[in-house]
Length: 174
Image 1 (tube, rainbow, N blue to C red):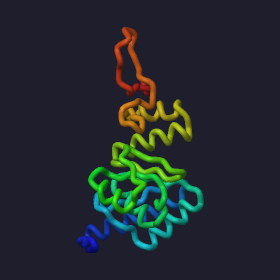
Image 2: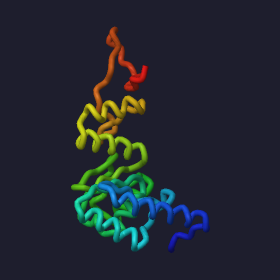
Image 3: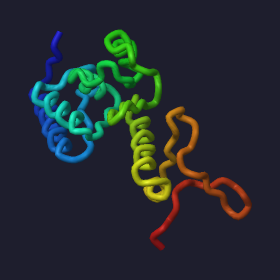
């Protein structure tokens, strides 16, 4: 049964699709999910996503955004993940779905949820720009990214003079 949206919801999702189009002009893209619902993108958005990935650019999804990406056919035969709420559906329809925080398959990065997506992007930053850039960014955000296992830390811990662990956040501006 097709999903029905109020006029305000449809306008919001149309704006998300426009934002996706604009992001596709860059190196990265993040397909929109429809309020955490399992959904398909419009044919226009699916075509833009296909062009983006086929050009070798990276794409990131979180939560049920993986279903939008799956609707393009580009996840066929790929490893991916989805939010735990949609895992059963995804596993039935896309057997390569993994029960992980995030999965990387080539230039396609899929994250299970928003926080896992933050950790996933942190690891991408580390891969692309190195630990120093990631550490600087994370400390400015007071954020301690976790590895794909959800436990291991991506940036080194900090300790005070008495060897007591202290927050990742550092005040650089005074």
